[in-house]
Image (cartoon, rainbow, N blue to C red; front, side):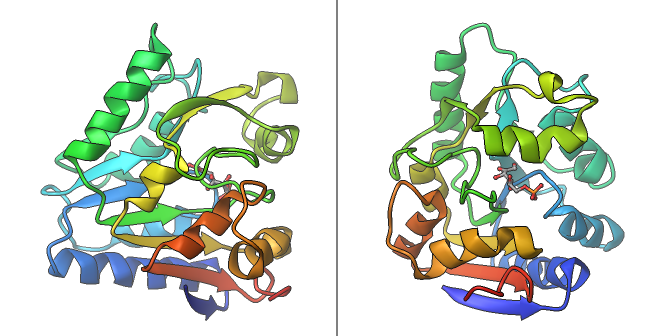
Length: 233
Ligand code: F6R
């Protein structure tokens, strides 16, 4: 893993954007994208740049079960507002959290990933070490599935909802195996509350108890962190 230490999320967003630009200059066509607070500065860099993304495809990591694009808390809505409405892509994929048959929708999403191999996968990390919504205990070679969110994740995400009871308890998430297929992975983390997860990811054993530790098995991972997130390394 290459570790890049930055002053803050703004500098981190700039670094990640440089990696995406370099990748695009070298033929990258598919970006794997994440939601949450962490990638917002990257998306700001992308939307304020003069780079054209209309030949690019994006594949997002996850979506809440029960929410769709018209729900303001859905990840589809987040992506539209943060990025796609301002910078059109050729195609944008987000798992369908409202599918009648979620099992079939997961299989369909794996097909989408296979048909659009991810060149650069952007990741954040949960305080418990989750990547995508692969919580501790998730198989390190998993594909897209419906997952139960842990209490820690529900609590961390309640800031986006009126009350904790409104936070969905399930999500559709790309699996860790699918994430590891990305040719290059860029994980960003900012703040002291990510320090334990970063320590476990970088220095701990590779274990299902720390999902991000699976990234140790990938040969092209860049970790962009501020001093607080790096404080336990
Ligand atoms: C989001 C995702 C999650 C987040 C993680 C960190 O699509 O897959 O793994 O990256 O929960 O969230 P923030 O950035 O809000 O701290």
